[in-house]
Length: 239
Image (tube, rainbow, N blue to C red; front, side, top):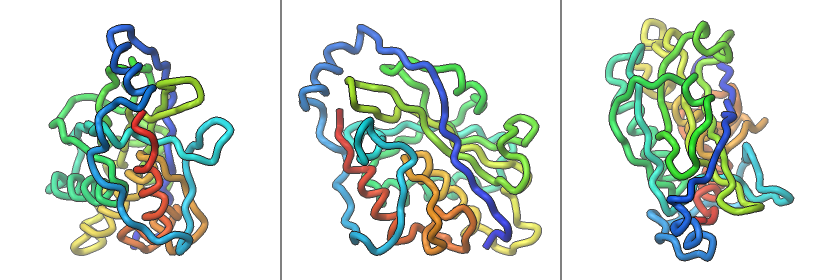
């Protein structure tokens, strides 16, 4: 358990532009002719917990999410990361992938910083999702008890449909390494990453302390409502 832990979602802003070079692929997707989904929709229990979506479609309660028919590429800037960050991050990503039915693809390390993702992107060629460690001086939203931030930016592949294109998961480089006061701290650290990945793929906070998406709780894995919400996010349209 991380006492007094507060984890918030960062919903990225950005200018998104369509590019003519991707016109054929976009037309195929608009008519449902895109590739098949990469993973099956996970089974989940309905109504056994609480969940909320970070963003919903215009005029609808349906969630905004990533396409389940394309991998979500991600990169890691390990500057300031604790030792053995690799299994911690990759295992959390795989757990989120299994729970949501969304496929992630690790693209290696990078020098990119979170601030670079505020500058907008081309919808047909967005940068990969970024995982990075930072200080409150670099990312002011990390001030106080906030140990992590996660969120994604959306674009419109067609009018009335929003879809996530990329995102950032930022971890406080000083608070995240808690091994000095919690022996064997992998589970609470992984819980932080899982929580922020939940935000990244489209979950919001809930008031139910039985869910990992509660902003301050003792869970180290997704709860029943988290799993329902994640599976529904993986069941969004490919196009």
